[in-house]
Amino acid sequence: MKLLDGAVAAVDHGGSLGRARALFPHAPQPFVDLSTGINPHSYPLFELPATALSRLPEAARLRELTDVAASVYGAPSAANVAAAPGTQILLPRVASLVKPGKALVLGPTYAEHSRAAAIAGHAAAEVDDFEALAAADIAIIVNPNNPDGRVVEREDLLRLAGKLRANGGLLVVDEAFMDVGPRAQSLAGDVEQGGIVVLRSFGKFFGLAGLRLGFALADALTVERLEAQFGPWAVAGPALEYGIRALADTDWQAGMRRRLSEDAARLDALFDRFGVPVAGGTTLFRYVSLPDAAGLFSALGERGVLLRHFSDRPHVLRGGLPGEDEEWRRLESALADWASRRDDAAREIKR
Figure 1 (cartoon, rainbow, N blue to C red):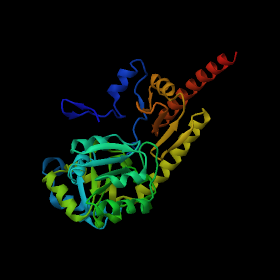
Figure 2: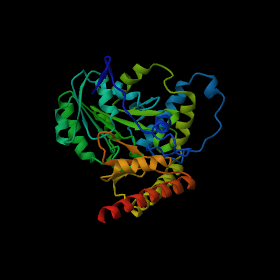
Figure 3: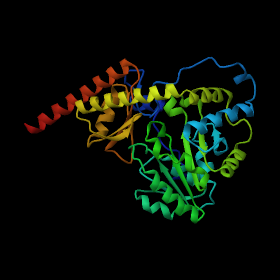
Figure 4: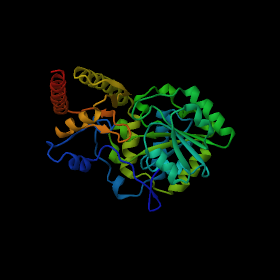
């Protein structure tokens, strides 16, 4: 983890249109931004009560939010749910629940976990061996994983949690994409055992990332410790209103899961048509691996279509879902152009 003037260096992420314009200054706009795993079909907007903006958030309204979050995510009770302005702000606070020691992150994965653990004073490292996590003071797993969609079985996670707990350690499971994952593998219902913190993101599945709302699920004492760090009014009034309504809208959630499954299958077929192999992912993003990943990223970027690239893994890309029909058409056209140039180059080599 690199340090800049004593601070942990920021991580490069997808979703920055400013960076995209700098990389591809001549690309047609608006960009088709497929560099995030955010649902392009957001929860329907509605008129907020004026009090959501004019008054400080009420404690009773926050309790309504944690009640419905506990029900939807499968936590034992609202006492096991801490609400926050996005899961990102939770990462270093959760890491600080354990005194500075060894933080191991099952990778390759979302880089902010290692960064947050370092901010909390841990010696942080990524490992690719699940069994190695048992030696950590705090072990962190993204499940389903970002960016490849890998899923660790619940029984394996519980076994690891038991080992860590016996030594005063902590297991953190980031379930940011579990809304579209195998929910039977969630540890949300097991958090009262202690030594487990589950993170859930609201903005990704509901397509409202700018609202900034997320949750930490843990035993009741750990929830109290986290809430004490936030103080009152941690969650803004608009986020309370959207969180309560959207989490309670199980019909919308069921319909959206079906729609996302159809869209992911459509994206797989489109990639396959142009010889781009899909190696994993979730129904909110697809993970592709190919030797010319850098060339594909650049070719699509020049056409105003952004995928997520990884500087430390130049052979892989992550692609989110297009939203409107025009975005699908632009992606198809960009892929066709790239494939045509690729095939022309291959024919030249054979001559």
